[in-house]
Figure (tube, rainbow, N blue to C red):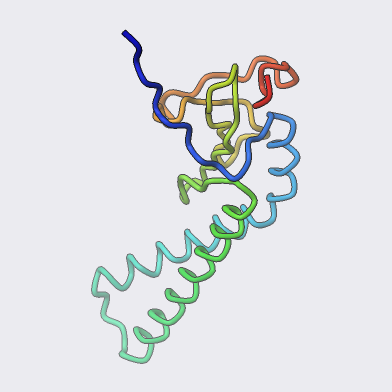
Length: 145
């Protein structure tokens, strides 16, 4: 009896740990901007949701600023997606870089505050299923292996 394998996810690219590290270094500025914009947006959304006693013109300006911040967050997330990176969280920022380990797709995982990409997890395991990347230069981290 033959069992069917699940379809391979269609990622725009796969990263080795060194490739993901190099891209993360280039994305440090956008990551900082994303974190800042997301936190400010959350604060404004909370203020508006709590129904604070604000004059109407202050409420309107806050709503306009919130819309601007939300647009900025979307723009940054879309920019990262165009590089092949998935933004999985905003506060704290959580990034997943599609990778291949022994011919199976995984995510190389980075969490805001971590100095480098040192973890990976299966596609459906999520953050709780992270495991350490023990040998970033290991040839098993290639899709052509």
